[in-house]
Length: 485
Image (cartoon, rainbow, N blue to C red; front, side, top):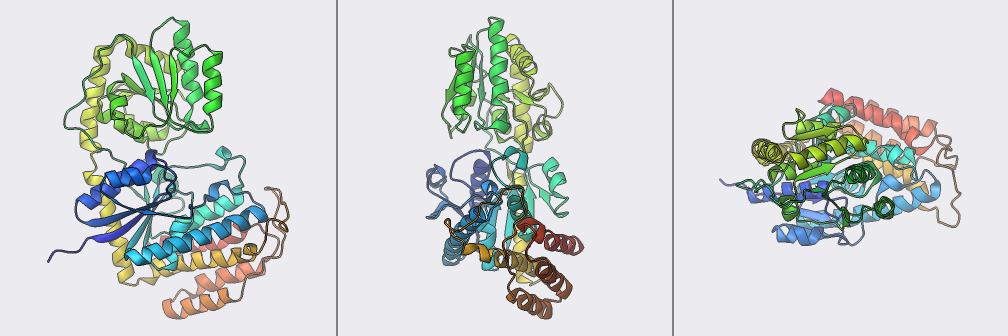
């Protein structure tokens, strides 16, 4: 008897199409086409996610209330209270849509927004957290470290399964979840490799967002070094982001306007890759490098920074491309010049990358692995295994109970508290946490976990910032997960 497809919600943290969003759409499409899954993509409507999803034949569910990002929240009462109200509102809206559609599992991508995990916990639905990288606090100097840390750990410990897009990323997150799995990204690989361009002016393209951690200033400096040698070439940067003015200023100061072009973000990059001689990326940190495998699928060599997400793809230096020293313009300039002077060898390098992409990144193994993860967490829920799910629901519940005192704080009466300071406002933890813990204990045999966690929070009611008050409970959950695994 043919089984009905499983209804899965893919909750995107943004509607702008970049690497993580392409991967989400590719995975949803692949599983949907296989007939195993009926995929629903959830996102706001500000970007082009809806347009692309519908063009791919996927169900798109618009979220009227944009999912708020916790990674930019400061560690003060006003910021936390505002964010908490928005997150709860978004989670409630999302939960309503999940219920109406009969969703059976929720897949949430990236550590950036709470509503997907909170909505799944509210409805007692299994959830999969799909991690695409590491966003360290040092890259967000305007935000607070404490609240972000608490939210990161809430998502990591509440999800039924954690999936990472690369093997090195899994090794990092295994500190939090020993059961984390690696399922590499994939792309659509053409039947035949694209012809290598024969034009007289070599062209290099970069498809990264214009953000500080993408190292775009390094590429412009490399272009300046090539210009100093009177070499003729093009470097085209496609994207958008907060560094737009900075990059434009650098191009003008170095008088590179005829050589370096800044263009808006392009979703369909096939023609750009086909017309290029090589892809360049100077990222300082990458979870995987989606643009790299897209370039490989078009038989284009890679000139990229030596970071873990790139090394896992490129492997041996000089096989599919070159690994350059991070933030070293001369290193990039040298490899770009090599590609200009060795078109035949560059073409062979691109062909080798294309063959590797067909074997490793066509999506068959990755989509099957993701389906296995989804099927496993659904089966665990149907079997009602308390060691693998009830404590995760409790964690989401207790997190919201802790934040409820903030919900009544308004912009007018909230004190400004420096990010490094302790939150000293009285934040009583309600007695219903103990009651809920006892109920779980009686029903599911997890008494010490629930009662000890609640007792700690009540004994430390006022002088700890939120993330320190939550940390011991998170650690209890973590130990519970390790024993369960």
